[in-house]
Length: 616
Image (cartoon, rainbow, N blue to C red; front, side):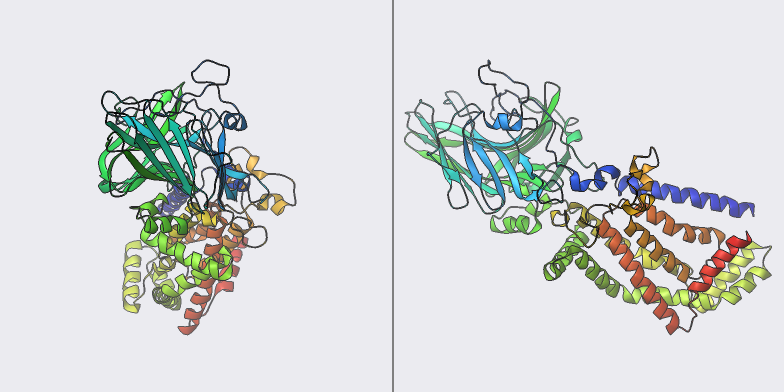
């Protein structure tokens, strides 16, 4: 009896550990933030200061050149509003079906991009997501292109203070590229032609015309700079930070916190450098949005991820530096770089990878180590979404297909469970016969299992075999922008966010937020769908034969409760999947038990459970 109590205490402790660990690593550690996903603004950074270091060979661009407030001396200035920062430079409007914004003629930067198709909340009238912002604003985040000199006698090159010239009334649209020009007055003319497609891909072609008398040797570069530490989700299964596929170095994912711990780089700062690589991209990614530089896929370049400090604020940068170009007198040289600045839509990313031949561009989406499961899961859900027009219905349909795929294995498990139910009288007799000798009791039970070809843990298999599917669906719901703000029916307006209701305020009837309760508020956010899931899991457990081990009995009794609270903070789409899967499992198990001539004692088990409580 003492041994059973020890096992029971150990089982309860292990259950608590599983619940806590799952929530920490795979759940939603910031439940309040996730609960308010509909109202959460996707911030692009925290206030930071630009730097003033000019680009050097091999060090293309610092975290930004100095911006000055009109009427003040040069040097870094305190951040101003985004609107004020935009007004510091004349601009060329960007207008495409997917993005809006402008290009700064001062510096020639692409530093103003908002996403037309995506809003901060589920309310379609809420503000659009702002991706890029100019230097000097609260959250600077921009792309810059240009040239760095090599050797002595390099001409004056355009920098962040250079005022480019654009045709009067110029407007960048998919049908009308723009060309910016700058003459340095030293026999060199620079031109920058910028084109954009219907989605979020810019094509930047920089050319240099040497009208002087001596050859020029220049390196073209592109950089993406982000000032200040951005807000991140901080989830174990999601990468946010610097990302790229650097030639044969493959996928590189570097978190913001890791950059400061990397070795020092030439020219200052810390980070990683990848010299002489060919193909791929380098950029910065958030959960749903990203910016990425795509150099010429046939030419070698140096890729770099770096962090620098300025006024106690970090500045993060991804850049690419191409090899030297020598421009003879009277000649012109040019280079082309692509810039992606938009939402990580799966179809668009795959399309660019194919059409532009970008090595590993689909890895801009964090499919994870189990991409061979995650990707097919997304394609399947997306296929049925296009068929039905609702991601919730698509998830339910995929659940049925998954059940069909595992039908033979599940049938064997349920058949073994049915056999165990049939030999319950013999099992009871063995326990009574060897009541004082646990060892002999277990040996006799094992012999019975072997004789009747029963697997005593068969009840666990239907749940275990769906864990990879469960995880892949969780990953799809969590990382793919297609699932963001995708509604189901009723109160579920966003399948990628937790159920917004809670039983502790009677699902909204009482004007009170249980999540505000100190310490335990996290566990009081128990919505309607998690409760439905817990009930279906409870019914499924009660259809199984009662395990002979008291510890197993207790574990099986507590498992629905544990999973109910554990899944309460998970995306609603995942809870709907699990609920539907449980219901299908109950129907399948009932059919198998009838087929094997075993009585379905669900109601008897329920009555027995309550009768035991009454006696106690």
